Length: 381
Ligand code: PMP
Ligand code: GLN
Image (tube, rainbow, N blue to C red; front, side, top):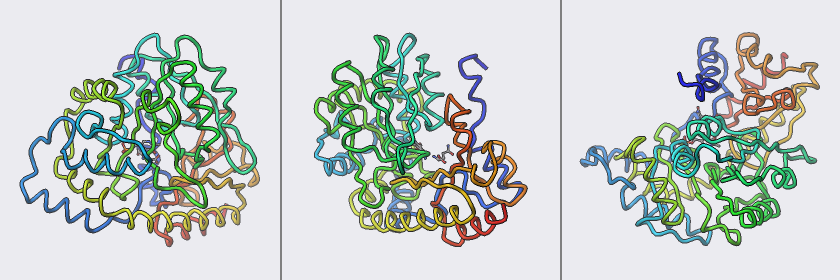
């Protein structure tokens, strides 16, 4: 294995899910739902499968999907031409990797906000670029962006900033002020932004998802990425997309075409259907996830954790110190065996494990009885 990939030989999700399976633990580690998406979408996939949509789709994605993505994105007031400004990818994961491969390289720095989704560091490394990490900071009841720290991280080699909101694992939804500050900085220092918006619909209470591309000066320098997995409970379909100005889309496409070329042919029309017709279903998903977040947070608090509920995503981070533990990573490896619950240590998503050592990430995108069973078991800690 080449040196730049040596830190990335396995993922916490694969390892923790394998451990959960081996120990029959309730798996609140890997974030995937345990119910299916809207029936109309599943039917559309079946119709496509039996209707002959089983060969290579066009390189940029099937036209009806690109059109549906453009219409969906227009809800934010941003316009993308389905012909040249939208690219369908193998999940957001490929979109992120292809963007970094196409737009960054040796000598470039990419600002990554920690804790960060694990594929970011690996994709920056594959591109041969260097990650410069800026930490989120606890601020009252949320983890906040430290704009001064981001500003201080920019230097003449900085090429891009990778921004994930709603944020995995903290659940932070960046505020208008935080995003406006990032936008100003990107314009002032001529940076590209690559945004990971896979949880765009999963925002709670009065939080609002605001795409960075909608801020002044940003549409021309932002690669906006999202995917169907989290919005329509189909994480295994791996249908994602890029919305970006023509030149940036063409660049990302150049990388993407030699990674997978195309993928998910018969699933593309089904996602097009979902984007056009299933947003009411997504609203009910959002409401049920908000209730599940509250259910899990109450249970975790009851079990003795200190919890900082986020305003979005599938996840909540819980501090293990009130229970007398100091090292959440060590605890995470023991929990499946000892009490039958799997969670993910937040420190593995960081370059500063000692600062994040006390947090466990729990996923609440599970049926209520599954959450209740996990809570029962956690009470025995
Ligand atoms: N970004 C974030 C923040 C995620 O949590 C995930 C995984 N669910 C992805 C990207 C990957 O998305 P996809 O499955 O569409 O590749
Ligand atoms: N995105 C999911 C999570 O954060 C899992 C993705 C994966 O298994 N690679 O849990």
